[in-house]
Image 1 (cartoon, rainbow, N blue to C red):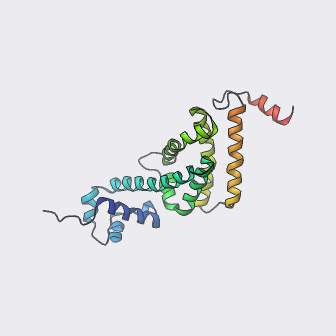
Image 2: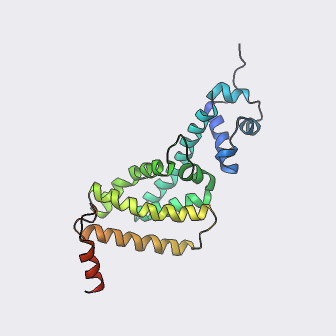
Image 3: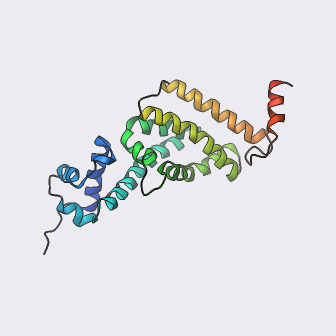
Length: 206
């Protein structure tokens, strides 16, 4: 009979998450996890079977950490602005988890788009209620704003963001106002059927 594993599955996932937080998902090996736990590699494979199975559970754990940040943002006075700031805070404080969720390709899947969809599910109800817009408009609004937030967060994680926290707040507010105004005041904006030439002529006064 094989010896009983002295670590629970949850404890092993938490230890794996610590490894990823410190060194990134590529550093998560059976040996690295065994060293973190102070044991041999046998319990790792006994519990999870394969490293791929373990990494899926670690990703789910990282997503729960991210959800905590998102939930805190959605409780702020302007929910989407709060969400955007928390998304960027997550990138600053948990760069390796951000890389895992938004910049790592797993199972031939674009994780950024998977995580964007997950974020949209969290944020959509707040957008509909706060801005009094339809689900379709909320999805368009979120997509456009998320692309800006994601770009800024990625610059932070890769060490190339030149903007202060205050400047980032101004960028998010300005873009949010622009998209919200376009959705509400330009018929066909969300569907992409509006007369672009006419809109630009009105903006430049022709």
